Amino acid sequence: MALIRLDKFISERTEYSRSNIKELAKKGQLSVNGIVEKAADRKIDSDKDTVSVLGKTISSQRYRYILLNKPAGYVCSTDDKDGETVMKLIPPDMRTKDMFPAGRLDKDSLGALLITDDGDLAHRILSPKRHIPKIYIVKLDRPFQNKYVDIFKKGIALSNGEQCLPALVRKAENSDLLAFIQLNEGKYHQVKRMFASVDNHVETLMRVSVGGLILPEKLACGQCMELLHKDVENLFRPIDFEAFCSDFSAFFSALLINK
Ligand code: URA
Image (cartoon, rainbow, N blue to C red; front, top):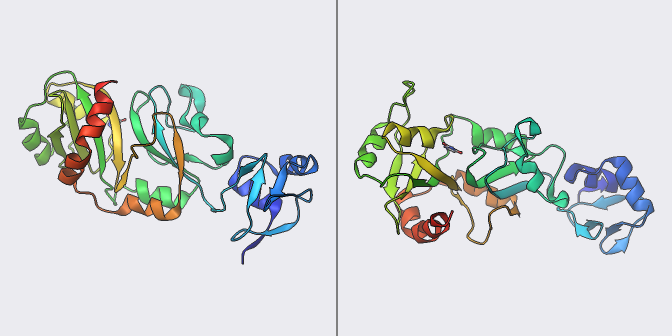
């Protein structure tokens, strides 16, 4: 049993402040187990009770984990000084005050992005010591060349002399212009700069997995879904690049070819 005040439970899991919650309660817009509740200070059992605000059920998880299929045109930040942020794409009933993107994709990049208010988890994901592998599919300006496989495997030096860790790359299905690449680090514009170092150019980039967490086929561009803590653990599962490419090449190639 985990007893907690109703207003505390809601304010920790949404963007509503305690005073908003009091107002909503007065208006009969909160419910516990389907029954309207006007006392925002009553205690509930967060393990068992179902709480709704304006008819939407509030997740009982202490921390929220949102997987967004990021569209182009949004910045991975909580600060909108450089343009509209990915936070705008999260529906209000899924968003909390302390959420932030646990990772970065460029403004014009697409694909899997985790947004959470769990600082410890974000730290585990972002820590350079962990080397969580990330797989991207890219659409190139010029045809893929087999020599990239060895060049990237050895660890390429970027034009400013920065040295990259060894990376895996493979042509994707359906087009010579599509390739998958797996990195174990996250330097600024790294994928674009690696292909620029072999005289190619990335036109479109989509992140398709973060660790063992694969962008679900059913998650359309611009949509987000809530993950459970156990799904989040997939981030730390190993992923086999070759098996991933064989299983998902046709699906992700078809997606990117039309972008
Ligand atoms: N590498 C890039 O160049 N851009 C991204 O958004 C992610 C990785």
